[in-house]
View 1 (cartoon, rainbow, N blue to C red):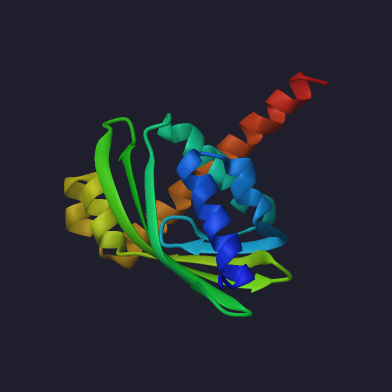
View 2 (cartoon, rainbow, N blue to C red; view 1 turned 60 degrees about the vertical axis):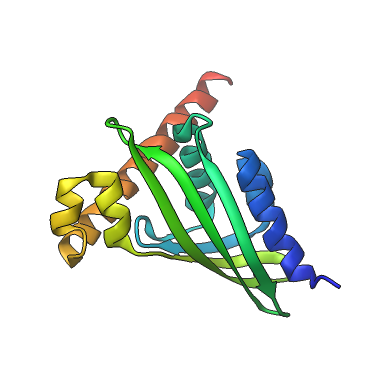
Amino acid sequence: MQHPNEKIILEFFQAFQKGNAKAMNACYHKDVVFYDPVFGHIKGDRVRAMWYMLLEKSGGELNISFSEIQANDYNGSARWTASYYYGPSRRRVVNEVVGTFYIQNGKILQHTNHFDLWNWSRQALGFKGFLMGWTKSMKLEIQQESSKMLSRYIHKMRSLEEDDI
């Protein structure tokens, strides 16, 4: 029998495969905290906006696979792979990730993605990523750029909402 917390992780990844950010975000607690090497620590609405942004930027060319979902009363994990094209040069990225989750009252409260940033940066950034992707300064630069990109996306979405009023 499947643990209820395995079910919420499964629902999250099934929605991810379908490119459905709304359904992904429905799996999250309202106060969700997220971390990965590219975005760093983000919370709440920024986490939810991140998924909309990433799915929109993928242009439907995002392939998600997942396996090894397991969970107990509080924690869970899954292995997953994202294959997509990154940036204006459309570099092919295949990112192998282990996601860990802290679950409270049937919702994901903390979501951490573990992956090799140097491997990611070599694929996404090319030679610059190969040379510098393992350094703390490059990690900080990547996180700062991701944060700016997310802030611009949120601002754009708010502007569009105001235009609809």
